[in-house]
Image 1 (tube, one colour):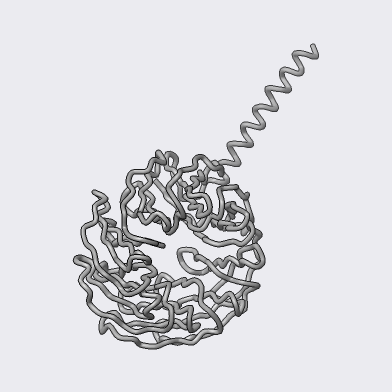
Image 2 (image 1 turned 120 degrees about the vertical axis):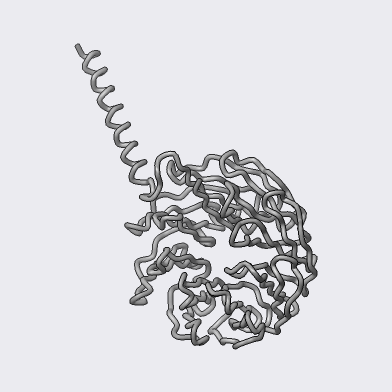
Length: 373
């Protein structure tokens, strides 16, 4: 009798655990995700030359891909089931098949690339090579380089205008911004900007580019129609990240040394206000309607949610040590934050503003992409 009772209890316990597991998976599944679709995070680990793949439904790491030295600038391709990135020390762009995790191509682009950008239609990728002072255009379907141009000294990255017509390249050592024709890479203009330009944000109508200048604690605004400098806006310290609202009306600039966030009114090209956030705010992201902005505080090992309509700081959410790259899934349900010193990925449920889990990924994760397919 006792054996039969134990057997029944075992079956009951198994059913309860299975049911609970199903409910947990359903709870973790983002609301927009239909059955059969996959949602993966790809994390570039600069310290060990790998990309870790995390299944965001099962909330577990499922693969580690050896891509080469110092992977950086991971981007989900807008049209193909691929994730692209660059190997800064290897001097090439790499292409990962999202489903299989296989490396489809390694494309030499020049010395010390840091990032890449896609054309709006996804047909081309653009890479500036800092060590070679070059800009290349890659056909995304064939993996072939189809255009090449020389730049100024130490180009930091290449950014495509939303209309797809121009490429904006900040040259860090020249303190200039170069503008190229996207089809041919023919140079169109060179504009002097503030010292040591790096990051670029471009308004949705492709009219103005805002460029951080770490050498002078400024943000430069460049008119892309007239191809002239509009203004250099003085900040309270060296700028880190640029976060542009989808409507282009406001630009948020994190300033770690002054513990704050500078808010630029892009239509007036002026600094509208400043906020004190925490210890050392750096990377960040925002939800689709820009009502919530999330800023990683590298000094406090957490991420700070900000309700932007009221400029209110919400309770900080813990992450791994030295949080860096941040990203939201396409539906805005999950917030991912890479801990660069702790080598992990924090997964946060946006609806409840709570930490779901922290997953070890690799050595010094420094770039992040999310792919839905």
